[in-house]
Amino acid sequence: MNSFMNIGLIQTSLNSEIAWPKSSSDLQMNEDESNRIWHEIKSGFYNFRALPVSKRPKIVLLPEFSLDEHHEKAISELSKALGCVIIGGKDFVRQEYNGTKYVQNKAVVVIPQNWPENSSARSVSKFYFGKSFFSKDEEEAFRKKGYTSISCPHIYILNAGDYGKIGVAICADFFDIERFVIYKGRIHHLFIIAYNKDIQSFYFLAEAISRLVFCNVIICNTGHYGGSIGFSPYNELHKRYVYKHEGSKLFTTQVISLPVNSLDIAQKGRDSKEIFKSTPPKYEQKTF
Image 1 (tube, rainbow, N blue to C red):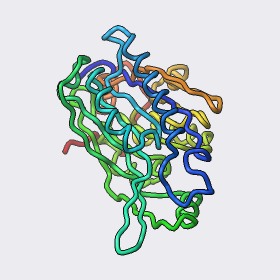
Image 2: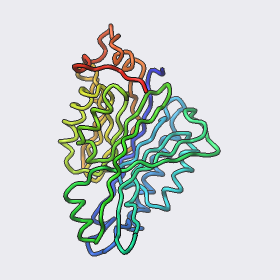
Image 3: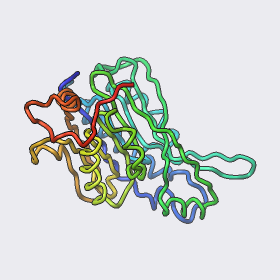
């Protein structure tokens, strides 16, 4: 396995009050706000492109609600140009059936043809994963606009080959304990994309889940609230917070490196150098 994996975070600063004003009966993102966020995303990719090839991210994370339908199509071009996987939150997915309006919260995963090479690709493949649990505020907003939410019950593990196995979740699903029972022993990294104001809870939970699941944890939260974080279960305290960004209404980009091979060795119980904390009780690395 590779020693490290570079992850790019683009902390966009979407303002939900502008994106979905209370005066509107629809859940479609405001065009002007969507275009502003798209400008931030392009700026982030420009910064990544300016890096030496060895420093460029293998995977780029975008927060929940980063892409409307139009820009979701355009994001494939950025993936092809940089040769990186992109995991980004979509605008609300709306549909109507027999007079009832339904809404889902989904994210797109864009994979360039030649990944993991950091070079331009001719084509990409895509798939989607969804949010299982909505907050009370979300459900109330849906009700007021006449929508019924649809839960996405599936839990995904992405096999990134020599870069390890990856679990993914959207915002409130980070609080789903059953998800971590499944992930324990099966993943090296957990990526959460979010639009969440309760950043302190995320900080505490990131450390707890990193220890319990024994994996790297990254939360890419909206810059409107701040609080994006990267945590790894290193033995030395100063190494554990791989990345932490505080401050509201801030757009920022960052590339961080997550341990892969050394963590995999520790998951197998062979961490003779004690680089990481001890594995949790009854931990066992599982295969599919």
